[in-house]
Figure 1 (cartoon, protein in one colour):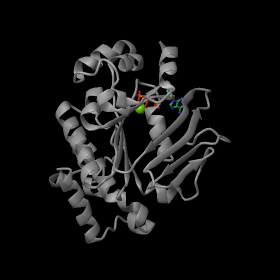
Figure 2 (cartoon, protein in one colour):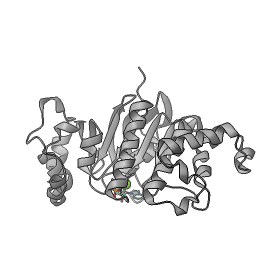
Figure 3 (cartoon, rainbow, N blue to C red):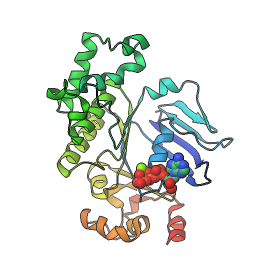
Figure 4 (cartoon, rainbow, N blue to C red):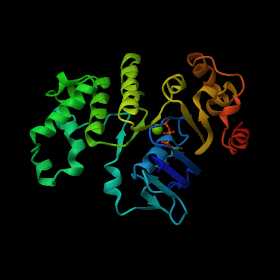
Length: 286
Ligand SMILES: Nc1ncnc2c1ncn2[C@@H]1O[C@H](COP(=O)(O)OP(=O)(O)OP(=O)(O)O)[C@@H](O)[C@H]1O
Ligand SMILES: [Mg+2]
């Protein structure tokens, strides 16, 4: 079966010489819910942005990223069929990325623009059945009653739910969520994570979510990929994360994180099978 995401040998240097990603090789199967964790600056957003085709990998490399078998980019060049792939990838941003002055319903309908003639989108001429689809998506995320409000008048949690409704309307097969709960209170965070988990379960949507909160990652995501200085240093079951690994990832902040996380195994369970390069990478960083 074709994987939802396949990343081969991804490296990224920015123009200032900073290497943000190193030799990333990652496969995510359809229907998985994966947490991407790591300290600030470890490369989580950069990785997700490469998958969405918003950033290109190093030129003339043998990197390749595929979503659902379709090429997003190869060797530092965006594939010419990127529009088709982008329609399958929903991106949920930390800061929601809604158009503040537009009604919530219109923001959700933006998810349909990839399959709507430009002039209909431009004139905001959506068909009744398209509006019904957007309303249904808003109702699934629990904010149908807000459909006529301007996006700017919603709370942060409601705005994030509207952003998720937009990806539902888009019909995305893969949802990339970049710290979707970073600016939310605990109750709104729980609702947003519950919705992502429901989309994953009910729609068989593959969800890759970057998180600072390790306790949330463990609660919602069976699999965790941890980045450290742009490298994958752990890829395995969230249940097998160890305090030692978290200390290597987060340094002095680890104790704070461990206080919030459920009790972890003192050593990795045998099934954890961390990727081979993690131990040297963390040893180097120590
Ligand atoms: N456009 C850019 N130009 C130069 N360096 C960049 C650029 N974007 C990101 N970086 C650098 O790449 C590294 C990875 O950044 P990234 O935003 O992916 O980290 P992150 O894990 O998402 O961090 P956070 O948890 O704070 O969101 C950082 O060192 C960052 O400074
Ligand atoms: Mg980030």
